[in-house]
Length: 205
Ligand SMILES: Cc1cc2nc3c(=O)[nH]c(=O)nc-3n(C[C@H](O)[C@H](O)[C@H](O)COP(=O)(O)O)c2cc1C
Image (cartoon, rainbow, N blue to C red; front, side, top):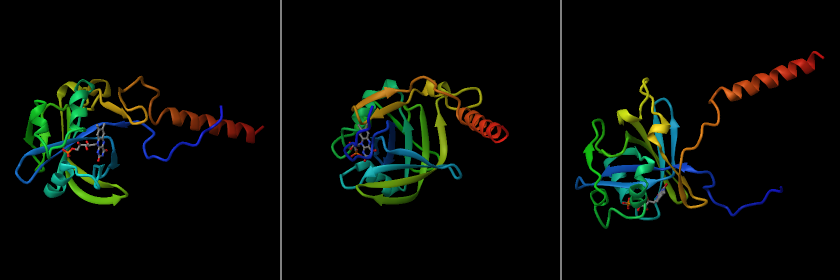
């Protein structure tokens, strides 16, 4: 089959859905849903989110004012609540209260942890940069809080237990994580070895 050029857009691949939360000046917890999220550093651990700065996002305002945020990971069972937090604005109503979500202040940063979310990263803002319509906000992870029910015996997060929400902008749908495809850093090493062996065999034949 041939290849086709597509209309220019940034999102083609599916992304993980996260909920970012921050306190406003009055101490009210704001939260909104984001699909533009990435791990941006291992040492120190940092995450970056991209938030539209040309539109009014109350959560972005609160994040910048408090210089902190919490990145929360919802589970597929919370997909309706996650979608709601992405279609309503904190300027109009108390979104968290409306869906029965509660928050407590983080230990390391002045930002709200949403109790109902199974995994939360307390982040201190260390860098911002604006590219086009979006402001990239990088937070250094200062503390990670996880429900015991999503952990294995080594305290690693098990995706099958967390059941994160995958957002597919192409079709405008949410998905859950599918089957395991391969072992990371193993299937590529095996291929690398096979290629090297073939090259050596060819050189010596
Ligand atoms: C699935 C989904 C993903 C979203 N991803 C982003 C994003 O990455 N960046 C962004 O600026 N807005 C994103 N939004 C939109 C905001 O969540 C939305 O504008 C929200 O109402 C802002 O709320 P606030 O004004 O209370 O902060 C997303 C919405 C949904 C439903």
